[in-house]
Amino acid sequence: MAATAITSVPQGAHDEMEQWEEFLVGRYKEGKSEQEFRQYDAEANPGVAEFYRLNHQHQTFDYVQQKEKEYFSLNKGKKSIWQAAEFLNTLVDDSDPDTDLTQIEHLLQTSEAIRRDGHPRWFVLTGFIHDLGKVLCLWGEPQWGVVGDTFPVGCAYSNQIVFPEYFKANLDLNHPVYSTKYGIYEPNCGLDNVHMSFGHDGYIYEVMKPYLPQPALAMLRYHSFYAWHRHDAYQHLMNDHDREMLEWVRKFNPYDLYSKGHTKPDFKQLKPYYDDLFAEFFPAEIDW
Image 1: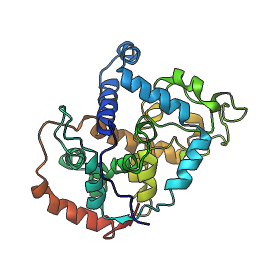
Image 2: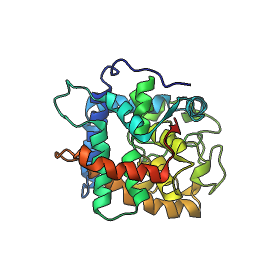
Image 3: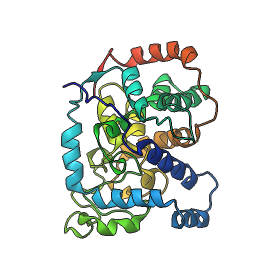
């Protein structure tokens, strides 16, 4: 099945994504006190608050099941990594006064920061591809179903999830099973067996399953699972493998949050390195 043609950027998509990412960096700024964190949440940008109100209302277990069925079969056609990144570039809104960086340049900033620190090539690759799942925006998915903090569904929502008060409108909040500590899961079942709220993290994880090592896959699936890797929530669902992967996710997180800068990466200079890197791990085209 060929990928859906995109003739225009979804109205406000780029602005809303930038708003959420700025909020995220501010929320998890290193050295920020718990008091400052709560104050920041209380005075959050109204657009971000509305984003999370919709996210927490609609990310039910049934919604996630529906979206997993729709997207995890990877029926959007074949693309190379560069083609997927160029497709994502259509999210850039030329009228946005706050940034002149393309999505590819944002990805390169992350991966180049990882490369400068001497990490393995699969780690550098993960930095480049980790946000490619945001192509979901270009297939008509709403912002609240693409970005934002992720969390398990099918069990009780942790109060460590950002804006937990907005779950009051979620149909699962008082469900006889989904509202319980373990919900549909067994104790220490492992996060690989848990359904996460739908978004770009889970989607890119499914796309990359055949190609990357376990630490990379954990980085992809859980990089927005802040209640877990920042606040130690959901320990009761973890197994030994999760504890091992948690350290890798925590290594990745600073690059995800703090790698953006004002200097544009030199795409022409860097492209040969990434051509070689992509060829090492992927066939010419992969399923999306």
